[in-house]
Length: 96
Image 1 (cartoon, rainbow, N blue to C red):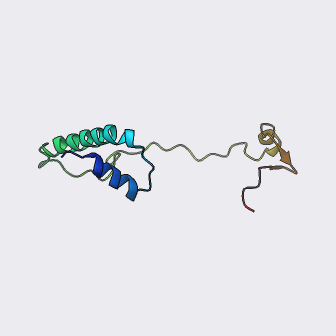
Image 2: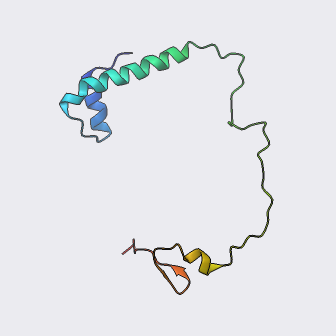
Image 3: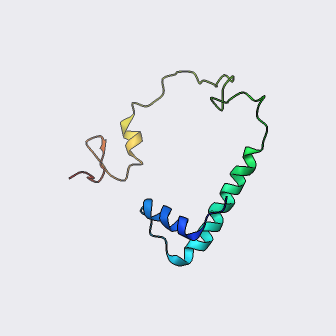
């Protein structure tokens, strides 16, 4: 499936993207190449392949032991903080 510059311009407009005129032709070629690759994938015979619901299905994930660590030492943790007050991290205000 070939995509022309007019289609790229329309899709860019619908996506609210500012695409300069000199980028329309290269973008049309890139999109056409991607669609050609997808068409090539459609030719692969997957009739006897079960759908994959998870990349790790059938594998037991390694679990670490739930052990208590030295997390209660606030002074040691705050040593690396750029700024701390009264035992807490100080961060810039982001909500007005």
